Amino acid sequence: MTYRPPRPTDAQRVIWPDDFGTRFTIFVDVEEEFDWRAPLDARNRTTTAMAAFPDAHRRFAERGVALACMVDHPIATDPAAVAILARVVEDGRSEIGTQLHAWVNPPFDADASPATSYAGNLPRALEAAKLETLTTAITTAFGTAPRAYRAGRYGIGPRSFDLLAGLGYRIDSSVRPGYDYSADGGPDFTMADAQAYRVSGIVELPLTTIFTGRARRGGGALYRALGHVSKGRGVFARARLLSRIALTPEDMPIEAALEAVAVAAGEGLRLLNLSFHSPSLAPGNTPYVRDAADLKRFHAWWTTMLDALDRRGIRNASLDEIITALG
Image (cartoon, rainbow, N blue to C red; front, side, top):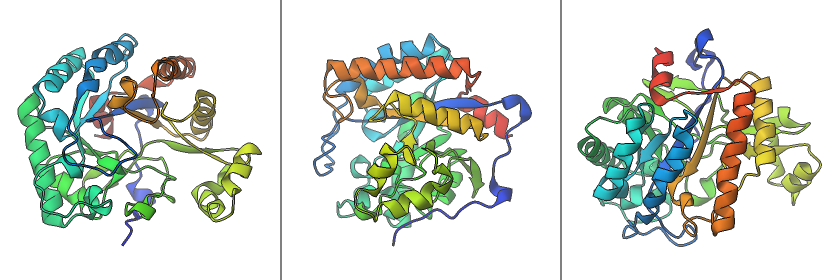
């Protein structure tokens, strides 16, 4: 059965303090390299792209921007990767969080399949065991218990929030509004929105997806309906009626992302949640950065985005600052 997070009530919505202003945060999926087009394989644990992480971090740190580094099992158990990230958090604002890639995270008690790659689909005991194993590995590696979580492939499930709260987590960032992974056995976030909310003792900080265009008020419902019409989404996008924009440099043109920021700020969204995958920092690991030219565009995307956020007075928020604002 496809998991669709219940729409939060008004009482569950986070009300940010006035002095928090409008802020942005950056979550990085820090993970192993693998062929995104091939079947998932527990043997794919290579972490060579981490060699590019210090330079990328420097670019952000020089602008006072914190990174929430969401670390999975291959990273947390690789001494070289741990050493790199230990230096990253010495900036005083970046922080280590957790990302569960179920297919490379012990224990391995389920038959591998696309559906079981979404941790929220696993039996409760197995999801709990994987979470506990990873949380312990990260705490051991970095000396501090992680406070934020993201399910790999955005694979949150109906039991995940209770399990996270039981392990002391404060924040989840697995919901990707406007996206539907049900065809592969994953969750359906079509009707979710980008606002933060509280559930089962956890604060959900959805990745920011914004609908732009003259028909944007139709949002996820209209976008979903257009998916059932041949070329419907493309026609609406070209006519500037409706586009789905995620705030990431990965396969998202900067012009579209800047328009989404303008819409989000104009509509009063108080926290923008941007993201990228660490293997994109080295060419050839993801579909988004295939060569040196792609990598140059990737870094230019961030320069332009951070400049635009500065002009709008939208300041960066670290995980610690977010948790403090939540009270």
